[in-house]
Image: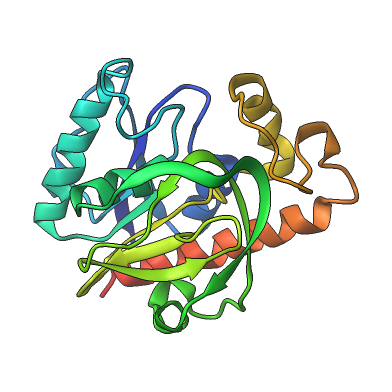
Length: 239
């Protein structure tokens, strides 16, 4: 069965990524990408699921990024529809803010590969079905959800760099978010990140020019993780 998925894109240089586009095509998923700086979102009722990409700003920079207000209203409206939602990076933070989570400076800010360990609840969550812990995650953000999580949220994955690598809403497993950006084609698209981001590289982690043959295995693992995550998310949509 084909599904229609609304994708929220925050900036020109942070597109859905070749991985997401390719997997959607193979899975007969219709992506409707809304470029928030150009247009308003379409009628939400037309879509089966929502994917919120990462972006160039923090969740509380409404003053310097006026579009954030509209994006937050969109996410709030989607929560009321109670349909499947998958947020990456900034997308996760927008969901978490609505649930009352505190978002602050990252314990280890930076960009690179990290190992995400599934919690007991994460191992049972349908998004991670078939995935072996630890997960290979590619990420880059200077902010993260702080401890403790609100009771309305469930911790699904963690790492030594970040307490909340993934979480979902209590009683609503189809609304889930990840701190990572695995939808990007790491080797192909990380150069654009380097031009636009000023965040440091995570300790011991390669980036951009350093993503060569020595790191291609990590990039492949990151891509494979995302492929199965997206497949599992679409399975959630069909429930």
